[in-house]
Image 1 (cartoon, rainbow, N blue to C red):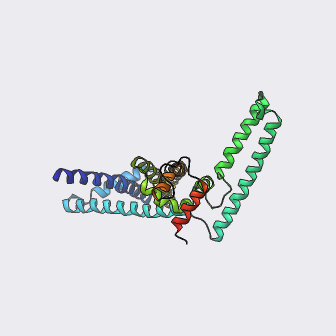
Image 2 (tube, rainbow, N blue to C red):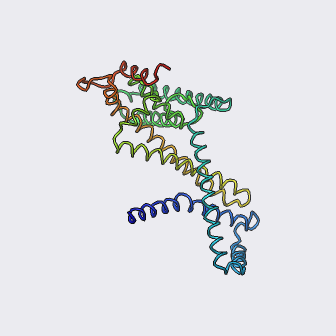
Image 3 (spheres, one colour):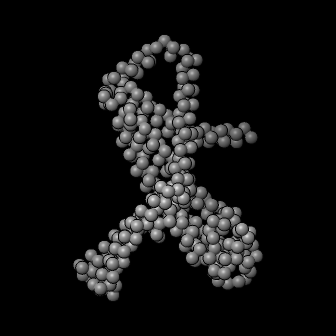
Length: 308
């Protein structure tokens, strides 16, 4: 039992250090440097060195109790900063996936929908032009290759806005909405009511991969929260703006990648295990061949909604 407790304690300590103390300590160190240097002396290393020497020369720091108390204070403050970043990250995560019923969100959704329709119209025109030039019939040549390249570029530009016409104020919300719409179109089932039941029967490898993608999305939201913190710090020490921009860019890239993977995994889970769920709840016989049909999906949705 003692070795087990020691192992668990070591893992918890390592996780506490990696997820809470180290990011918070880095932010505290940057805050301290910014407070000492400010905008005027932003690159004055001698000023920082002098401040550190003056601090180290104080008699109180020679006492073991004072030094231990200072270390504990730094650890607690770093942990508090990391917890604040986690709290803000949770808010960012919810904001990214929001439906957007307030006026500002509706206006943003409408603006994104206009941009999507414009890109879609340009893509449709490019596809028609490609067929006229022979690209759709196996033609070859510089003009054909150029037409196909334009179609691909316009497709990517449209999909960067949303895979389907935007219905939410953010790309992240639309990506999850697209997954729900495609599941409903394929199987006639409401993903919102299906997913909690499907999650209970997923095998462990699938659960791990989906949880990993979700954790990556949450980690990207926390990184975005740190970007906000460094942006506020830039009001006193402008080099912190570089850290804010870097954190924000990495957070955005990771959030898009992880959410796209999460939405794909959710769709795949329905594709692979949706029929198994219908069998377990008695809507299908195990001997019945074929894929999950639309009428079965409708029955599943009605059953899971419990006549709401």
